[in-house]
Length: 104
Image (cartoon, rainbow, N blue to C red; front, side, top):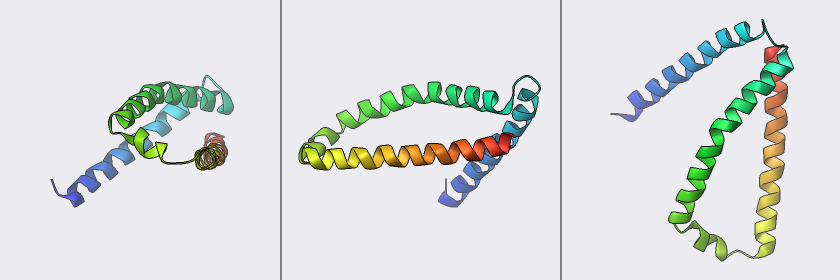
């Protein structure tokens, strides 16, 4: 399969998922408010991501990524962790604002 065909298939799949989500949002708003709906939607997403995160962590350990991290000092690890947490919070806030505006 060529890269162009694969990219087009993934783009089509994304559009199908995105489009069908609007129908679910409209129907969901019949029973919940916008923030309650967003909360439930994000909780469901988090529940599905937990096994993925655990699996990826397990794969990283098998690929000796721990050995590469062992070369870094504690200060470098703390700095990277701080950047990761700060970026995660910023992305979470942006996602919350965008999702809430879309839902309202």
